[in-house]
Length: 459
Image (cartoon, rainbow, N blue to C red; front, side):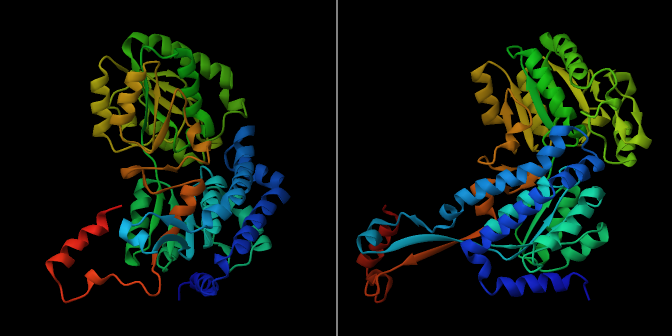
């Protein structure tokens, strides 16, 4: 027997009681999660820092962001739960009909989190699921061992298992969970594993959200503030040790500004992390030695213009700049997921767009320019999950803006109302007066009745 079946059976039985659909139950679950985080905030800081995020704002954000998202969600939840009235064909409205859309929870939801945001990317989907009236099974990433162990200890203290449960372990545990008939699956991770999740979900026709990743482009044109762009992109590529799904994967810089950009990028590295980043806690570690080896295998030493050194035993690889990079380089063949930033000079923006469009659609893209016509052109031409103009990475901090990928970088999105809607089924209901009949639907049919079918499209 599947060892995890008892958990999902318990959650499905509880969901069938309809208790999760009440506003009070949802608020109670959100309050429990907030209390868990607040009561143990220092323990969460220590766990995340122990796993790899040594930079102060990074481990503080991990524990505090869910608390603030909970407060935002609670303020909005009553409005989100209200049935929405929709416009109807004129003849229906005039005869007293009403059209409503109800948001209905799916049921038992599996949330599989990544190592790189071990609290945020596990609990934010859970907040969306609980606010929507679903039960949740959490599966933290085994590589974030300290955070996973802390959650394993705390979840049973603050939640009933029929509402929120947690399963730890590695590949075998995930495979076991995927054999069960969950009502919704939310996965954050790589496209490779995302395909495995989607195949498993297909067995039960289970809806999914897949938050994946890819090589995220940044474009810096000749009109940009070069110093500003360099600092923001270097920070974006190296924060979280570069292990951030929205990190810029490479920079296209106009050839006339390439040398200036490189100089400013080197200055930014020094100002951010000093002469020895390994001794600076503001620069976070790589998650494990195997990832250090993978990153080193991608780097061409002949193109390293800053950094490039590593200490695998201490999970360290220096923040690194690569120039001149091109699409034949090994480092351009996959998502880097480390503090390495390839820089590609360009002459013609059309060539840049063509190259980006040939690659899988990225999770993020960044445009640095003062040329509004160019910005508008790139935003309307390039397909990507989300991004920013004259900023990097931080669009995903904004809870009112949907976050998610497109194509190989993901399916579906969440955050705020979008997350609530994604974790609920839109149930449309037409309400008719009890004594109102639509006669043209019924035989015997005539040309006049057939003509009246046009009324269904007149608003």
